[in-house]
Each structure stands twice: as C-alpha cells, then as structure tokens.
Length: 419
Image (cartoon, rainbow, N blue to C red; front, side, top):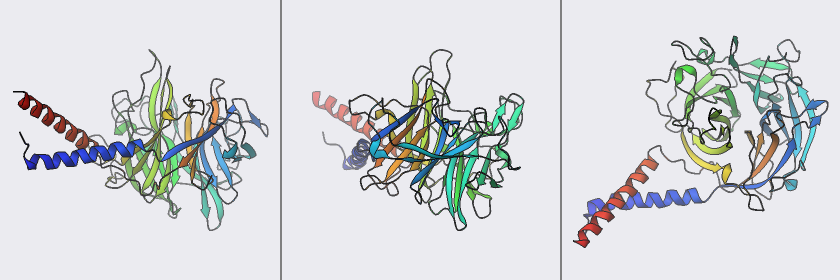
C-alpha cells in the first residue's frame, strides 16, 4: 500500500530536519585544547588565589583579568591580572599550573575609597570596558538575601586601580524584600546565591548585559530536578546608565539527583557576547555525590519578549530567548581517554588566538575549599558562532513529532503487508 503524497511530503520534511539536527549536534564547534590547575592555598602577593568567578581578556596587553568572589573574608575583595599560555596547558587531570603567571592583584574600593569590609560585597563577574578615555572595568556584586541581612545586587564600574567610577540603577524588581526564604506572598527580588552571576558587554561595547542565576522570587521557582528556572537578562545602556531592555533565559532542570538530603542546583552563571543579540550562556549544575555538570549554549534574543515592564513573570505571556547546546563539558576527554574532571566553572571569555583560530578561556571558582581547585580550561573554536543556527523553540518538537509519524506509518504499513 502506498501512502498519499500529501502525507509523505511533511514526513519527508520532518525526516530531513531530523537528520540535519542530528548532524549539527554530532559536529561540535568547540574542542578541548587543554587545562591548567592550581591547588587551593596558592598564594600571590600576600593574597590567597581562589574564588575566581569571572574572567576577561585584555587584547591590548595580551593578559587576563579575573575577579575573586572572596567577600573580604580571607583577603580584601580583589581582582587579579595574569597571563595564560595555552601552549603549556595539558590534556590531563593531573595538569599543573604551567602556563599561568600572575602579574598583579588590585583591591576593590567602596564609595569612600576604602577596601570593602568583611561580607560587604560578593564580586562575581568582570568585564573590561575599552572606552575613549582609557580602559576601565565593569563588575557585579551578587547581592544577599540571608537571615536578617539583605544586600542589593549591583552593577558597578571602576578604574583599573579599583577605585569606583559609578553604580548603575538596578530596577526595583531585583531588590530583595519580604521574607528571607522568599516564600511569603508579596516577597520579591533576588534569591540568595542566585543573583547577579553573569555579565557581558555587547560586541560594539555600548551595552552591558547582566543576568540572574535563577528566577527572582516573584518570577517563579528556582531550578529543580523536574524543571528549569526563568533567569532575567537585563540590558544596560553604558552611555545613559539606564536599563534599556530585559529578556528571559530559561535554564535547564538540575542534571543529577543529589545523595539523600544533599544539595543540588542549576543556574545561569555567565554570558559572553558573540554578536548583536547573541551570546554563549554557561549553565552550571551541581549535585552532592555527583559533582559539577557544565554546559555551554548558544542563545539569542531573536523573537524574545522585552519583559522590562513586567513586575512578575508568573502568569504573564512572553517568549524566552532561544538556546542550542554548544558543548557539554562532561563529554571532554584527556589524552589518556579519561573524562575531564570539572570543578566549579563559572567564568568564560574570548581568549588569545592559538594556532590561527579563536579560543575560549574558562575559569573555575574553587570556593577556597581544600577539596576543590582553581581550573583554567582552553577551548578551540571551529565555527563562526555568529552565524551558527539557533533552532526555533518548536524545532525539536517538530523533529520528534515527524519521527513519531514516520515510525507509526512504517508500523502501519508493515502490519498491512503482513495480512
């Protein structure tokens, strides 16, 4: 029995889409160059190196800046300058710190020009601003919602010597108010430890994008094993200092279940601009007993709703940013075939070119824990990410639906032929 042409045409289209999608997923645009690691307790200029949560590349000096999330508890809040030579990185889990050379450390200053007091700030991300009047730095303070202590998340700009230039006005929706747990009707603002983790500059340097790790209290739940969370991505105009738009990035669910009674989470921990309205998004999932899962997604604002006018996302109609998996770092292998052991990777930047191609440099926050380590991972870029396709939200549903129809048709035809 021959199927009608009207049925075969959409099925053929679905099959072609399925094969194209599988082919694009099979060929990764990123590959593993190597890594360098530093043990917790490594010292530089009288400070303990650690908590490196954000990183950016300075092409003018061929060096990197990395911010520590030390809340002035071990040493004053600070950022480091360093060089990273990927030619010395190794594809091995016992990789040393070869290729990592710290060249400076700078203390962050409060509005009075003094080092931040203990627990007075929680630095998370940093980006170099290449302005007409010389370079400066943007950085985020995550904020706090714990017990009786609330601290607003902030986006700040500072001179290279750590003294403040200005603070941006963060919308009221982000400011923590209500109960510490954020579970009482009328509560709003950031969740504790799920706030301003991400920061990137537009490729033309005119705008900054800041994102929360997970949903604001009024926007819905944090990520769970069953579902992801709605992170807000706020766009700020650097000239005016004002928020100019806001989008929603939907994170994945928590990847692995924790050991009984153990902690687990997943969230958006960094963004890196690729082209106009397009970014690499880094999601980090952790589960006690399983460790870290790090995934890089290509995401953009095409078709996404500007939600800056929405006080709450719950019950609202909007379209989130599109996303497509670039790389699951759990698939990376060392030269001996072992899986790359991942620590708490939180930072990403474009790096120095290597072997005639672009690179990405990632950094891990060791949480100043003796059981963790500072990790630098170099990835080679094999494709033009500015033009790589990002599927429409319905693409995979269409693909799966088409495959299901093909399967059903084949089974039906086989049954008829057997009669």
